[in-house]
Image (tube, rainbow, N blue to C red; front, side, top):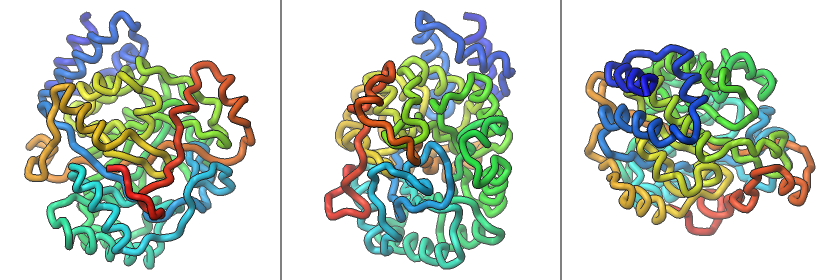
Length: 385
């Protein structure tokens, strides 16, 4: 297929494909799917070999967020029955992080709900970073705390943070349909602040919110322009009781095409399969490893993930290997060193009030695969790692 040959050649040269080429990837048929995966896999192996980087999420503060992001189960007014708790103490967060590192995670992502951190919050996170690195000095730490004010990125860097995550989520044209309490431009500015402070910038998207192919291409081209080291690709988890609970429009094949498009547009960047992979990729997860070079291990922010042991078995069975602590993630021309960071989980939001029975009426809905997290951080139950 001429399209795929062209995209592979461009990916190996780190050349940006055209918008038309990116759209064409999303428009390929199921008959072409394995060819699409194989082509994206050639680009992935060129820059990242057969390594898979493992990342681990620690939800420092769950729920009670004043923002109205429609995809998020922690938003203001959310009726999703998630865990709600205020800030974990540094030693509690350290214990949670240690579980992920013991399971093979190379990076820990510290996430807190909210519009953005206060200066007191930054101090709190700094103490948490100290606690984590005191026990695991080689672990990479990423912070994901929302919109940053001037000087906060520099303070996080000085405290030992290696990276900062803030996702664009969707296209600028449709952002106002998803969130009204802040703007797409606000998110872009926070990613730029992280860059300027010397943090490894991470920014990604959420697919499956009813967006068009054009929206997906727009947000990925926007990410390419921002040039983050890591692009997490989240697939919406339509939790019951959220504005997007009916958005069961992703198939495993669609997810693979989206991941391939991201790889072709961002060939030498760490592409991570983030929230929702178990729900939407399902048995096709091993194929996705041929495109993406990073995943989250275990659970997400407010939902359960695949068992950590199952993740490790899947990686090995697919012929890949876990990236070691001493290995450099990014290609040398990108500066090596810190590469991946954490993406937030695209789980659900406010108050549609739909019943489980109504959700089951949505064609293709797999509500049986959506499980609220009841273990790990903020509980007395051992984490899944």
